[in-house]
Structures are given as structure tokens and as C-alpha cells.
Image (cartoon, rainbow, N blue to C red; front, side, top):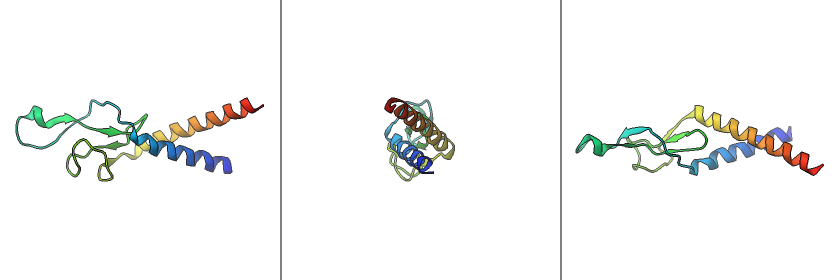
Length: 100
């Protein structure tokens, strides 16, 4: 039971910490309506790795900055959580194997 809680806590920490990773994306969104279309149709800033679970909202936030007011995607968040749980379990298995 303690092992499962430890793995879940470490996976949650690593998932939240991965929000500092801002991978390149081909997502675009409209930042404003003044001027030519090419000037306002810009790449969207995303955060999280390996799946981006935070995306910049052009309606309510400062453009090109991730903050608490931006869109949260629960599906990619759960995928990241699962990924980091598997990585943590693998690291524990390797640690046990090396300690023998």
C-alpha cells in the first residue's frame, strides 16, 4: 500500500513539474482581431510533457504565457500521470535489482 501511494505521489509531482516544459506545437489560435490575419493567427503556447495538458487561452490570459487561467486538458494530464507512474515503477524495479 505504501509503495502505491509513493508511486502515485512521485508520478503526480513529476506530472506537475513537467508543466515547465513548453514543447513546440503546430496548434494555432487567434490572438486579437485587429490588423491582417497573419499577424493575429499565431502558434499557441502549450505546457506539459510528453502530452501537453495546459494550453494558452487567448480569451482570458496574457498571450504566450501559461498561467492558472489557461485551459486544462484532463485526458492528456491522465496520460502524463500514467506515463510518469510507469517510469517511477521502472525506476523502483531497477533500484531493487541494483541493490541485490
